[in-house]
Image (cartoon, rainbow, N blue to C red; front, top):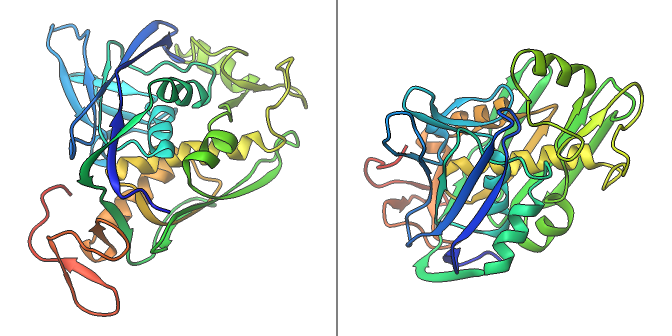
Length: 315
């Protein structure tokens, strides 16, 4: 059953940890927010002494090479937002002010599990405002070489079908299909950690990146084996983490999605590209408050299709 009311945290939460690229400690404060606030980042600790507000929307994305980055370095940016965004979307959090004093969010253990645990400690509260959804009306697709991603209509739920295919036999070809619910997210998606190849990590270190990466926050793949002494949390932890990332990147739509997401060999760049394809045409989607009632800005034209009644105010 879909959540009918908007939600936020019942109390503030503070989380601290190392940034995976800077290697520096960053402090994160999650503040409850009112209805229709959305997820917004408050970037503090900037050189000019001023703070910056950055909406967690696809239009704020400025880089997707190593992680998902919102905002620009010159005026204040926040990197590696995908794990927190994934946890918020997975648990159905609609409104939050995320205050951070560093240029990237803490990597923690490389998964979303510690974000989930922090949220569960304080709990969630519902507002009187109805929850709005982004309903996919027409298929959209993005491609990058052999990789592809698409969003398809699915009027009643958010379903993900993610497949990866690595030449390295430690990973190989894996596929995971999931209909997103908070319980499933906690058990089967949130604990999956980010992963990387030892050779790639060494090159990133030389280039000044991944300075906070370690076996404590990354599943490291060496010469035909997993380097972490504890091994994997799931036999298919690699594809589960790709699914986790997809949930976080797609949360930058600004509303929970009613649709099916399918990807093959995808990543941050492709996840954001399919959102851009979706928002390129207003006929591709509608904003609804559940699977029957439409937002007042939309007019029914038959066969369950809704079109904007007047110009949009967000995209």
